[in-house]
Image (cartoon, rainbow, N blue to C red; front, side, top):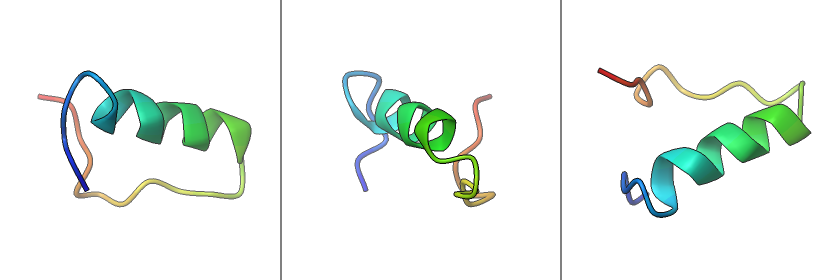
Length: 31
């Protein structure tokens, strides 16, 4: 997984919003 502003974090956020049942791992956290 690429933690880049261009598609890493944004993609995770979009997927999380589109799939309420999908929970982002604790690994993905904004500072």
